[in-house]
Image (cartoon, rainbow over all chains, first blue to last red; front, side, top):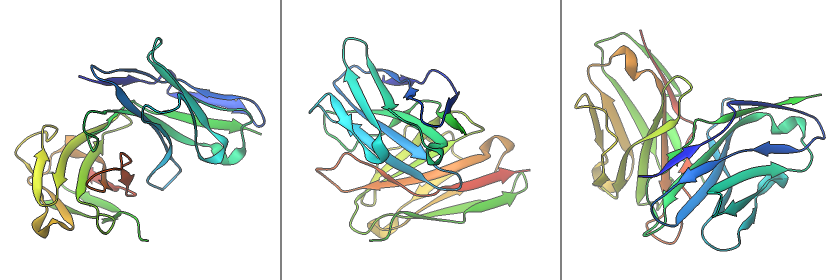
Length: 115
Length: 114
């Protein structure tokens, strides 16, 4: 069975500061890993994904994440936070054997940006 | 290209009533998924359709939930009778049959059972 742990249900950073959202996973097979973002009153939008190619993945809006197999981690970072980054972020894992498999999500991290 | 749409956006019903949620996937997407998020907890998988067939319904909580996808296009999720613990946000997602791992999500339906 696969699982995802997101440390910190709420994270606050100052505008212009580094954003670091943590995600650790467990999976019995090589995983596909995803970060989704949910802005207020909107659906989930894909930020980036890891599918066994490059371990450093770049996504939209300046976000990136690094897959570290030894640490079973896929932390999300952004060098400089912007007010528009305020949202809830979800890490998810799926089994990569066949693709199109169900996603297992973490509990989410709500990011607040302090002006 | 239109994204995944869900109807209604919000629904407030009383315990014991019936509610039907609808999801229209992206045109041409054969995979359709239902997920649910209850009261700030994690988003949990409910079931997966491939075209009109149920591929995986391991996440369906009980037999009060019935999902259908007649004709392999839109899907409905019926809750009958609704209980208080069914409150939450119901998300639908879709993806192409092969070659694309990304699931594209709709805005969700917020269900409140009183």
